Length: 285
Image 1: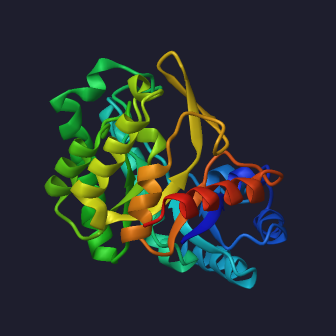
Image 2: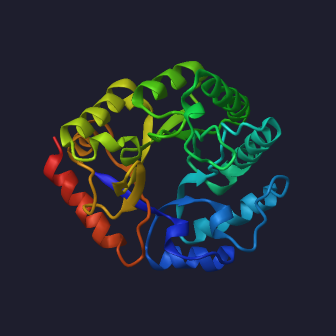
């Protein structure tokens, strides 16, 4: 089975720590992805403002409400072409690592960015030079994660630096650390040419599990459509994604994995979970 959760910033607009977490509690959601900069209005999350006290405070408020952070979101651009800004991004991520344990987070998660200061889709993203830049960013993060004994979650996206299962496998070999795991967002791995190709989609997901299934520790769940080469998010069942191979693999190899719904709403969350559970029941082995 899958244990469903939701991103906190999909549940409600920004508010104080207690206001926001009360909203999560009202929905009776246990597992969340928390990006503090997107959710808390009374906390400055810029570099240099974290402290042990802040981590303890947020951790205690989560615990009071039986809320567990499966992913502490710190989505940076490790491919930023400006060296100074790239290293500042890395510093911000490491600061999240330092205090993630105090909040009870399973990992700190990010995508792998693009070689553009504004995250535009540019061909430079897919170059070896950019891959090495991103690898350098994550090696700095690795050094901190290993010293702190915390986990880093890396998410592949079809138009980011790590854009395919093969590149993710290369990255895991290059980073060479047990402190790195994979956030599998299956929809994000599907390229526009596979929008109407369920067999092709299934092949991509099977490839991901074949190459690094042992490193997949949490899921992002959603659906999508393409407008040209731009992906637009949809609720589960309202887009192009074929859940067959994902649910088959999860049923065989990832019992009780946490699946965080993305771009859901408080009004649609239960319905989305029911649809995904039905897909799991249909395709489980």
